[in-house]
Length: 130
Image (tube, rainbow, N blue to C red; front, side):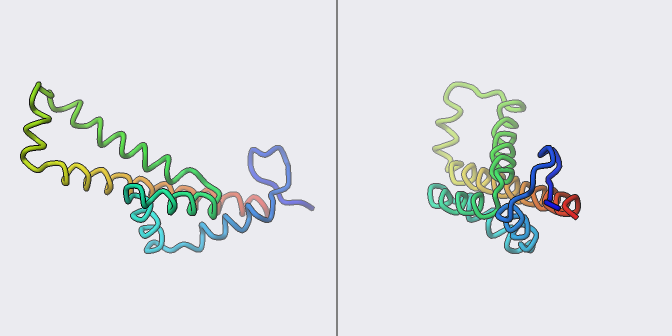
């Protein structure tokens, strides 16, 4: 009998997908954080992000990362009234590194949450495969 994935209409789960799911499950918390922070580095993180997405066959971590980054960007726009000249005064006060650090941390945390969700989903799919 062939293995199946939920929602796949009974189609067999390929061996490549099974290997990718096992890779997701083999990543411990430290390795997940390393993937997340490696993917969050501006420009240099793109190859890390691509390698992670291809080897684990999931786009969930970067989607979670971008969603978290968007939420962090929306918070100041919602709670702070931005006045003309405010952005320029913030850049003069050296707030740019703090904003970049907050953005990178937000993306990394979202990416890590996405990895955790992808691992839970993979565990579920493998259980259905039995």
